[in-house]
Image (cartoon, rainbow, N blue to C red):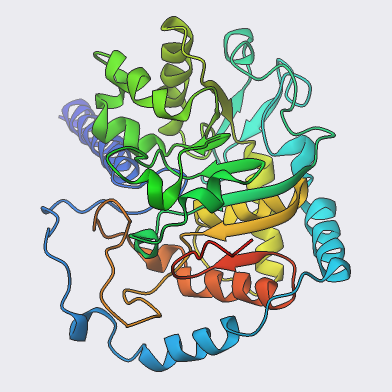
Length: 359
C-alpha cells in the first residue's frame, strides 16, 4: 500500500513538472522578443480611436512638448561630446554592441539580458554565425538617421531628408514600398528584426523560408540586427534567419545584439532616471547611433495618439494601427529624455512634416 502511495505521489509530481514547463513555454511565447510586449490573444481592432478618446487629458502635455520643441535648435558640441563619452564609457557600443568572433570566442558563456538565469555556452556551430569583425569598429559617420515607425511619419514627406543621411537605421523590418518611400525613405544601412515578426509572419522559419528572404530585398545589403540572446525563445529562430540568408545567398548581413551591451545600456538609462521593464528598440538604436555618429537625427519618434499640428488622430505605426503594450517601454518617458537631448543640442528630433529647407 505504501509503495503504491509513493508511486502515485511521484506520478503527480511528474505531471505538475510537465504542466509547469508547458506554462513557462506558453508565457515566453506570449511575450515579444527584444521589446518584450505581451501578445493579445483576441483579434486586433482595425478601427482608429476617436479623437476625443485617443488622448484624454494629453492636450496640455502635447502643448508643453511643442513649446519645448519649437525653440530654435542649435547643435551644442560640448553637450554632445559629454553625453557621447558617458554612453561609450558605460556601454562600449563600438566594440560590444554586436557579437563578433573577436569579442565572443568559442566556449564563452552568454548571459541572456532578458532572462538573467539563462545562459548559453558558445559552440563552434554558433560561433560560425557571428560576424568576423565589428561593423562599427573605428568608424564614425557624419550624419545618421534613426527612423522609428510612428504614425507621425504618415504624409510627412521626410523621405528625401532621411535618405540624405550617410547612415540610415530602421527598426523592426518596416515596409518601404507601396508609396511609403516618399515619407520614410528607402535607404537602409541597418535594420532590426524582432523574432516575434519571424514567428508570426514567417512561421518561425520552420517551413518555406523564401518569402522571408525575398522580403529583405528592399533593404539591400544592409545589416540585419537580431536580439538572438535576449530570451531563449529568440535563439533558434534567429539562427534559422541567419542560415536562411546564407542558404539563399542574400546580400543582407545578419548580426546579433550582444546581451551584455543591452544589459549595460539598460543600466545606463536607469541611471538617467528611466524606469521601464524594457528599453524600446528606438531608444536602443538612438543610443547606439550617438556612439558612432557625429550628427544624429531621429524620425518617427512620437509617443502620443494625436499629431502636434492640428491634433488629428494618428495610427500607431505609419503602416498600420496595431497597438502595443507601451507600459513596458515607458514610451513618453523615453521621448522626454530624447527631447531633453534635443534641447541640449546633443541630437535632433524631427517632429511633424519635413520641409525642403530643413537640414
